[in-house]
Length: 76
Image (cartoon, rainbow, N blue to C red; front, side):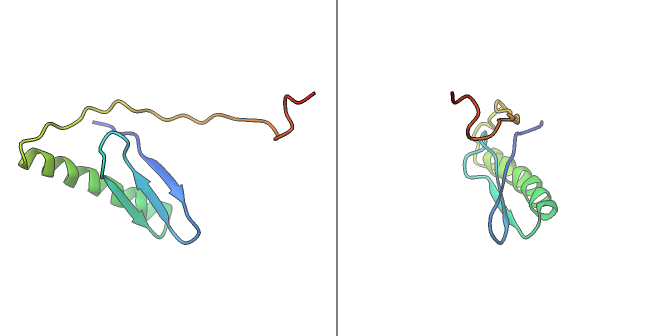
């Protein structure tokens, strides 16, 4: 399964969360580290859900990038 992951860069670290798995998140010092950690967190999160007899949510979210112009774009 492939889950969408949101990665945010903070002032001193990177954070990652998984919209389809509430409570599944990771923090790392670098983007590479947080990508590795969120992958591990997803595996552990799914294992915990299964151990509790809970259903594992199917991946439903997706992500895309939208390019926008300058803040003045579209103003007369």
